[in-house]
Image 1 (spheres, rainbow, N blue to C red):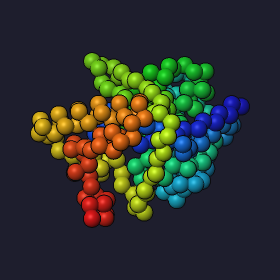
Image 2 (spheres, rainbow, N blue to C red):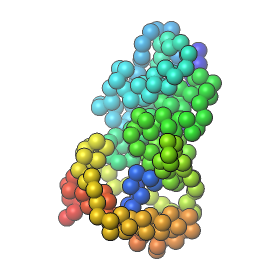
Image 3 (cartoon, rainbow, N blue to C red):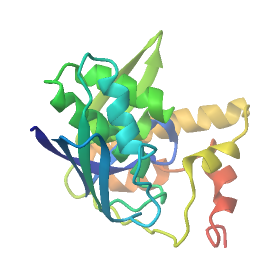
Length: 237
């Protein structure tokens, strides 16, 4: 019986002006272990972050993602044991859903002999998640810029200069991606779009060159942060 183990990183997306196009992987990991077994159905064990909240049936996001990929093949689904060792905080803005999706896709793809390319896995992940920034960073690591081009996704990946350290301030409450996206306006002023384009270009330059003084100035945003700040108690105080 096959047994597959996948480590998938936490991610931070947007990074200020890079709304829905920029993501970065962090040195914090969930581990997904997938094992075939003779017993029909799913046996799901969850420990660590979210263990009291994550379902242990076929509605589990990792399980649903595995099924999603396997149904694209002629692989005969039998029984599976799924062990999730979670270090990524659940619904705290560090890509827990992206980690679940990428972990499930990579594990299932290994099960079927790497039937799908990384580009195909990325498209599947975006189809499930709905936006590319976190899933791209979870899949490729480093800093990833990703955009829709015609009917496909294009992306570029790089590793930021040494010396960059991340501190995550994690509040003691959950905020779902759906809720965070629901407060965003459908239209924004042209001046705000231009502001973000300029700051995003500077942000990528700062990360590539290790210009940390420029990085501080480049993180400003007008497309999503002003609308989301009120959702986080104490953030605007």
